[in-house]
Image 1 (cartoon, one colour):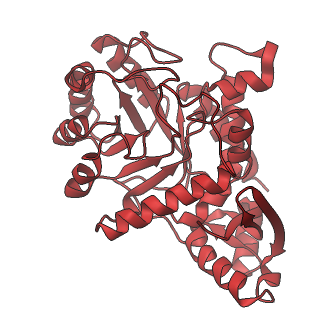
Image 2 (cartoon, rainbow, N blue to C red):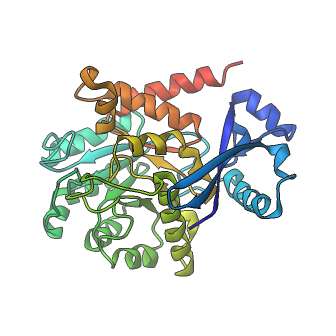
Length: 358
């Protein structure tokens, strides 16, 4: 458990960011000159549930005491470092991951694409709408769901993976599974990324598969299991507890000779979190840049949107999803896992154009 945590803040965008970064009055997020910052927020974890926060300009850091200064400077190196490409994916602009649930019971679109032909057609539509990654899952991990037989899970998704790889070789495929058997099968069929919502905690063989094949993976946080994760989740401080989880997992991967540059982190919005937990994670999402990995968020159609908008809720929650995606973009988040690819891509394109116009 850390004592101090560094969050970049007071963000700058577009040509103004480039100008201040060039004059060394600001620093870039993950090597992206279109997003800069000139302040940090430092969280001081004093006791289990006592956290203080203080803001410093970049100039003020050099005057801090040695302990705090060295931690901040170490974090800053990871915050500003350019993220290396993963499976050919670049992180100097936002990337969209399209959700493809080939299940009868997923929380939002369960059953809509359960047949192979419908799943493939939906994947084609998402690719044409701007998705650079298709995240394929054959098992629901909605709140209250239970695990299914691994061979049945593979049977649901195999033909779609094979067909997409044949016809869309430049599109990246991500396999959403908690099971080593599925990971092995997916890798044998050329999936590019493994997305394990359990954070490699469900199947103890998972990490060995990923490490042996040197496959990139999404390190996702979930408290508990889907069956129980929404039953009164508790944290000392959700932001810092999850940061500690990621830091520990990354160190473990490095110790076991896995390349850290292949890790993408996802704080798991809605996975073992209540509304206040989700809001704190989203509002301070830039804290995770100091881990030195690309950051992914999956807010699409999540129930926290309903809890905020109440009577204004809609089935697809596109407005709430887009709002959370654009906020993430402003905080330097690089990847967005969404259902409504065309609408979210449209929003990102327009927002980015406005943001980068003088």
